[in-house]
Length: 269
Length: 278
Image (cartoon, rainbow over all chains, first blue to last red; front, top):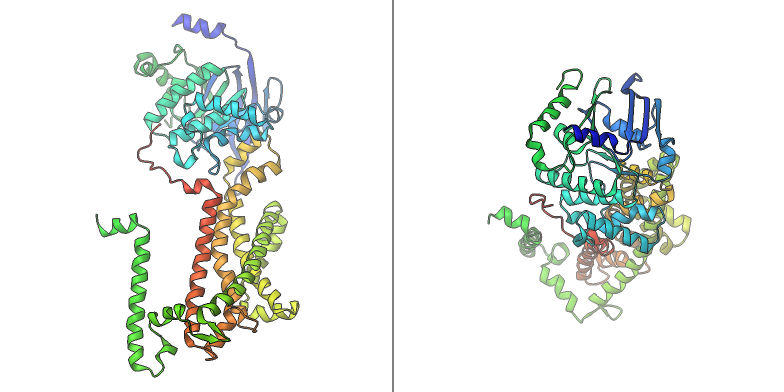
């Protein structure tokens, strides 16, 4: 296992996202302050697959939304290669995948994938070339002219991922993308996602409440605990790459799952 | 297959049952009426008597057969209804757009839209007539007034039904407000817009017929009141009743047909989620 650790350490470990003393306080209905997230310090490396793991109410989605500039933090700061999230968003460097596929019913699969490219004023030839490339990557070439209603849940989620990747984002933000899917579909998409990640070398920030999913996919798992939401541990996952489904049966995998489970604070788990 | 399954798998079956049922009830009633009343055709004639009129070559008024008369008046009424309907549709859509763009507009316009809708058209018609001074114009205006409300409210409901994630997604692409309207809000609202059209198309026709009755100058409504006053065969009255019902229902179905023509994804059937394959 030690040479695997070596490999991770010697890999390109430039810090891409620097999160300092980050906090988010919402006002509840009675006007009282409610801390959704507090005191988060975290460095995310370029090209890393990192998971934000925790039960509901731990602020993992809040953290993701702040990185994506969908939410403005009330405390602390986020810098991405020295820029604030808003600048990065305006440079169109984020790809976002939500839990629901958020497809546009009136557009075909291809046109769904091309939507961000249209928004970013790519010309037709470029759009088609990129969408074809993406369709192939997620294995949906045959379904290019289908409408979302004609697709299964798993296929819809692939379109969602393809659309996020079509703009060639530097950072892929995924908010529980597979939690609505059945086990079989999920396993297939795990494999696909890891393959895509290897091919494209994006930084992936993956929000989930599923411990074994987080351990299986990630380089590091950030464990968040609720009330108030905070980062309670960061666990290195030293499983070798490429990951295979068989690894889930190994003792080491189980030890890592246990280690992650034990790092939750508050003992609610 | 159980009866329940049969009915749910064949959507035309309940309709057939309804039609047969109505014909049965009608004919039973007509038979009773024909032996108990002195002028049964004024109360409830047999269906064959009414539909027989369609093919009758006998002139009922100024050298025209009943069918010619009905079609003639119908074309006048439908033309007015159509112009009113189109005007109302455009107005309704634009209004919905304005209300979506500006919260202030929504707050100031929306409650009063409902008020207009509460005034009975028969009360409104003379007012509109005295404003416009022209019966034809007022027919169009009233059809438009009745059309624009369902269109405006349904389209607005469509705009407001867009999920937050869609906005988030567009925001992450750094899309402009104009792009969001063009690529998300307006296409998203189209099925809702058509729901409005399906409601308002028969309303525009009804309104047009109703306003016809206020003054002569042709149209189904004026024919209706004339035939009721025995100025011509009573069967003309019944023909008009049936024909109006038919075009009312047809207009709504026609909007559904248009919707499917405009939106290809509405023609595709949803896959069954049970055999979810990757």
